Each structure stands twice: as structure tokens, then as C-alpha cells.
Length: 388
Ligand code: COA
Image 1 (cartoon, protein in one colour):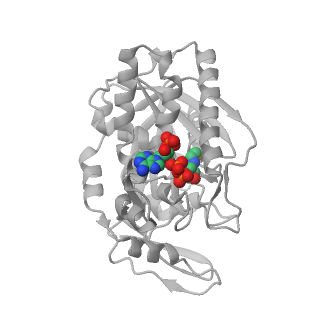
Image 2: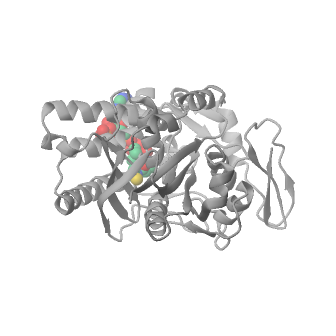
């Protein structure tokens, strides 16, 4: 039985900052941001969007009534959870109208949470092939104003329906994974901002990739020649390229050119959204599907997931016959087109405006946010949402 990604949906908030403008205000050469780091635009969530509303907005794009009746597992992977106890998945389950006989949970492991969710969903569907699982990666990446990591901030969510007989990607082979306890990126519960040892996290990302890639090759008797595209967790678009460059020499020139062309297609969305932590790898996969003109049914896609702290995992799947019918390029073009560019000053004002933490009430005016699901306010430490 084949298990894999049956549907995939993506949401990013309606505001963004141009990285050339951010570089200018920060006194940096814009080429450092757009070329050296590889980011062109950074998504900015207004107060009306948080990880729950973004997750629901991503999932609403793909779910039909039949799916809502068959889903009995809802997993939200997030690094930016706002509650140390209540799971974001319960809000999302309710907002989407999924039938109540479901398990719902939030998984935390830096940028790895959605991959952990997918592997859990795969096991669930193997035992219950008639059911479906919803896995969502949703995050707001916050390093702080004028910090080294600021240029890699972003916001968004990717929702995936995992099922038997999937219509997009069928998982195959044995995944390869490793855990090592390191301090490259973390966020204590008292801090709204991630703490990061930037250079060390880059080195560890590459070391983890090399380790799981070698493990994967050994476990599955495959080589780089067996891959038609490789997608990477993308904290910024240059990062995956650095990792890919480590292994390119294992293939002939033709394969190298094919993998590099696929890589360019796989970073287009991420370049204009920024880091969305748990969803970044899957946004890159979606970008590849929507933007590559070379992909064909049956092609094998390798996926490298990395969650600081740290876990690395490499797994692969093949594109299912007819997968293009599940794509929605025009909708994503509209989503990007309809975003509003804000000035650096506006971004700084939004960034500095946070929800009350003392139990007081705040009603959020979502009239300028046309997203289907918005955060409407907070009172007595409880968040409230509305579906338009
Ligand atoms: N034109 C073109 N490229 C330029 C440039 C210019 N004017 N100025 C600098 N660059 C290049 C640098 O050569 C470097 O490229 P390289 O990495 O290929 O050597 C790149 O831009 C970044 O410059 P650097 O000086 O290293 O930037 P930084 O000290 O501000 O830190 C990060 C960059 C990514 C470490 C920082 O943004 C960060 O901490 N990000 C968050 C953590 C993260 O995303 N980790 C990834 C693993 S999960």
C-alpha cells in the first residue's frame, strides 16, 4: 500500500517587507540579504494572524467535507507555540470543522515538528488505511529587530493531508535520521525571540545533512543519481544550496545541472516568505512542484528535514501519476500578488506590538485582513478566532 501526501496547501500573511529596504535601513549592503543570504521579501504577520489562524488558513485551502469526516489525526508542528499546555491542534481541529472522533496534538522540535508529524501520520495510515491525517507546520520566525537573524524571519503555514493512495507524493524507502544534543538554536519559554549561534547552526545543519544522507544511501542502496530533485529545510535559501553543494560531486555533470535547476525552482516561494520553521521544507517542496517545468510523474524527490537542538532526517518519495492536477499555481500567484508591501517603520511597529500578557482584553480589528480565519482578540488569557 502506498502512503503519502494527498494534498498540500500553503498560507502566508498579507504583509511583507522588501529586503533591499530592510538592508538600507540597517546599514547593510542589500546584496548581502538578497544574494549572500538569498532572501528577497519577508512575510510579516499582522496582529490578526497567529500560528493557529495561519494553520487553519493553510488547511482550509485543501480540505473538502469528505476529508473532514475521514481525518482522525490532527498534528500541528510548531516552534512558536503560545501555550505551554493547550495544544494549537485543538483550536485548528475546531476551526476546520473536523469530526470530533480525532486525536489532536502539537509537536515541538524546532523546525522538525511537521516531519515528526508526517512520520507519525504514515504509521497511523499504515494501521488504518481508510482514515486520513492532517499535518500542519505553522510558525512565526522571530529573532528580534536589528539582530543577525532578522533577515531570516518569516511567517506562514503548510498543511498536508496524509493518506493511502496519495495523489501527490508516495513515500518510499527507509528514512534515515539522527539525534545529537547541541545548542545551535533554542527558545526558552520566557523568551519571545529565538536564541541562536548562527554560524554554528549553519555548520551543524550541513554536518547533519551529510550524516543522514550517508545513512540513507547505505540503508536504501541508492546514490545521488537516483534523485530527480532534492528539497531542503530552508531557514534562508542559501542554506540548502550550501548543503547540496557538499554532495553534488557524487553525480555526473548532467545530474548536477538537473539537481541545481530543481533547487532553483524549490526556493522561489521561500525567497519571498522567509523562514517558516516547521513548514519551510514543505514550502520548498510545494515551490518545486509549482515552479519546476522539468519534473515528471515517477520522479524521486529527496527531502532533508532539520530541527535545531538537533534532529536531522532524510526521506524520499515519488511523484504520483496525475500529481499536477492537485496543484494550484494561480492561487499562489494571487496570494503573493495580493500581499501589501509595508515600510520598515510599519514592520517595526507591528513587530513591537504584542498581545497583552496580564489577562487584560484586546479586540483586534481584522478588517484589513482578508484571510478566511483571523485572531479576533484575547481576554482572560484566552485567544478567540473568527472564520469569515
Ligand atoms: N554581497 C554578497 N554576499 C555577501 C555580502 C555582499 N555585500 N556581504 C556578505 N555576504 C555573504 C557572506 O559572504 C555570507 O555568505 P557565505 O555564508 O556563503 O559565506 C553571507 O552573505 C552571510 O554573511 P555573514 O556575514 O555570514 O552574515 P551574518 O553574520 O549576518 O549571519 C546568519 C548570517 C545566517 C548566520 C544569520 O542570519 C543567522 O544567525 N540566522 C539565523 C540562524 C539560521 O538561520 N541558521 C540556519 C541553520 S537552521
